Image (cartoon, rainbow, N blue to C red; front, side, top):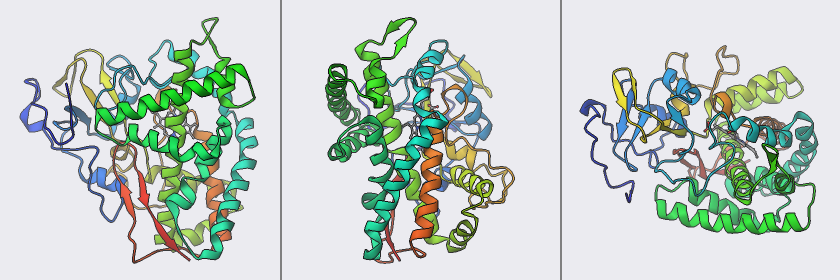
Length: 402
Ligand code: HEM
C-alpha cells in the first residue's frame, strides 16, 4: 500500500474510535522547549493511541508500556523497525534480529566498542574536537550543525570505518533520506544508493583488508560459517544509521542548552575535573535530550489494557514519554542533582545501544573542550534555531555567538 504522511489510513475495525489521535511522527511542531518536550506535549491520553498517519500505527502512551514493549519479544518483533514499514531489503544487523539469533550477531559487534577500544578512539575524539573548536574560535560565531556537529562525531565514525572524509556529507544525506523521510520512495532511493556504496567498500576490504570496522565485519562468522555478503552489508548499514546521526543530534541539543542556560554551563565548568559529577551531568543530559524513538511490529494478536493490537501492525515507542514522564518533578528541567535520571535514550533490553560507551565518551569530551576553550556562548537573535522532532530528533540549524 502506498503511504504518505498527508493521506489518512482508514481506521481498522478493531481500533476503538476514542483512541484515534492525528499524530504525524514526521511533522511534530517544535516549541520553545525543544523536540523532546514537543513529543511529550502531543502525548495522547490513555495507555495506547492509534494514528492514521504514515500508513496507520499504534503509539505506546504510558511510560510503563514504552519501557515494557522494548523488552517484550513475545508480542513484538524488530523485523520491521521503521514507520511506514520498509520490509527486509534494508535490514540492519543486529537491531533487526530477534532472539534467539540476536545474541550471536550482537556479540560479533561488541568488540568494536569495548572500553579499551573506546579509550583508544578517545584520543582521536579529543584531538578532532579541539581542532574544530580552535578553528572556529576566532570567528566569534558558528552555525553549529554544519561547522561542528556534522564534522565531529561523524569525523570519528569515518575514521572508525576508514572511509574518506570527503564522503561524510554524502553518507549523512543518504542516512537522513532514509530516517527522516516519511516517503517510502525517498527511503528506498536513499537505501539503494547506500547499499551500492556499502557493497563497493566491502569488496575493497575483502580484496585489501585493514584494521578498520568494515574489514573486521568481513571476517565475522555466525554458527561456525562466514557472514554472507547480505549479513556484512546489513551490519555496515546498521553502523551507518546508528553512528551518523545520533551523537551529532545529541551535541546539537547540548550546545543549544549551554547557550541558553549559562548557569548550567558555569556549573559544568566548575565540575570538569570531578569524574563522578561529570557522569551525573552526562546522564541528566541523556535523560532530557533523547534522540531515537524506536518502533516495533506486532508479532501476534495481543490484547493490552483492553485494546487488541493485530499481527503486522506497527507501534512507536516514544522515548520522551518515558524520559519526561510527568511523575518526575519538573521533568523538562535539566537538574543535575535530580535523583531519578533513569532514561531509555539508549533503548532498553537486549537491543540497548551497542555504541553507548563511545557516545558517552564523545559527549563528555565535547562538554570538557567546548566549555573550557570558548567563552559563554549565546544564540544569534537574528537567526533562531531550527530543531526537528521526529523518530530521530535533531537540529537543522543552530547559530551561536560568543
Ligand atoms: C547519543 C548517541 C546514540 C543514541 C541516542 C543511540 C540510541 C540507540 C537506541 C535507542 C538503540 C536501540 C534501538 C531499538 O531498541 O530498536 C540503539 C541501538 C544501537 N546502537 Fe545506538 N545510539 C547512539 C550512538 C551510537 C553509536 C555512536 C553507535 C556506533 C557507531 C551505535 C550503535 C548501535 C547499535 C549497533 C545498535 C543495535 C544494538 C542491538 O540491536 O543489539 N549507537 N542505539
